[in-house]
Length: 415
Image (cartoon, rainbow, N blue to C red; front, side, top):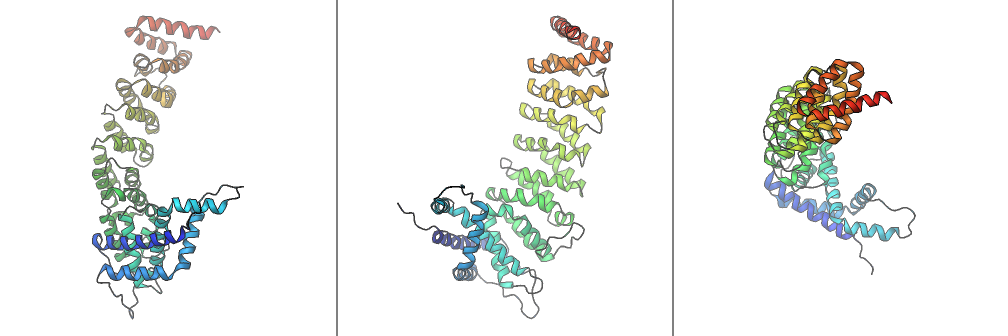
């Protein structure tokens, strides 16, 4: 059966998305005046959403060529044709039909950005396009547009009042741009906006002046508190990014996040301790210690895996924490400790004063013990006394295991 052309359907969907987005923005976001205006041509502020939707509908209807170009761009980005097949047009049409809504979403955001570009031209700003572009961009964002996730550069353009992203040393914010972006961020207080929040906040956090004026650290924390079961990875990344230029805010918000005791959020924190350690090593260890107060075995495994890297510059911090993780962990977490840090630990302390080898042997399972045998054998080559001390500790718990371990290691040396 012949499938009807999907392009007119997508064109209609784009028009509907524009109309709905402008209405949503008008009711949820303060529509600020243009960032740039010409003195001789002041902006004419719209008095109702109807005026904006009619103007947008007219521009959309009259610009079929622009729609076709944007559609071609979307196809080039999103469509993956299968080489060597003869029915390319039929497959493309089937793809267009199946993905019509996502394509319309992309095109509507492209239109918003094109209108914003016209408005952000410092020499010849189009103030009418500002109201249209800002309302469409804000509306699609708070409606959960997937395309909005990738538009952090457009947000930065508004903050700086220019489509040219500045170098980090040239951070002169535009007051109106800050207000405009602040209003959008305020309105993104819903679960469908969280993907965009996670994408935008780390990008905004890279600029100290932007992070300060828009209170990015606080926004990241508030988003995590409100929607802890959403993917909050970008919010945690933003806090860590801010630590490079605002350690107080980073510490306050990261510790508050840790204190939430939410499993998914704690896992995100644990997975990012390496990154934080490169910036604030003491804070990374402090958060590590707090996260170990848990009965979540998966979290303990992650913490066991990262401990050695957190103690790279401070090896004296390793042994006490490793001993604690052994005491509360299972065979999996003990294996993570052994594989990630025991060899380095023994390089610094071949005598194993803390008794990690024997503790791991006693509390670990067969897989952990198989990894420990090699380390204990190497310990004997370095220090007979240390080896005997390890066996003595094991013997205090199980004489038979100590005897068996001694025999196996001695037999290795005679091979």
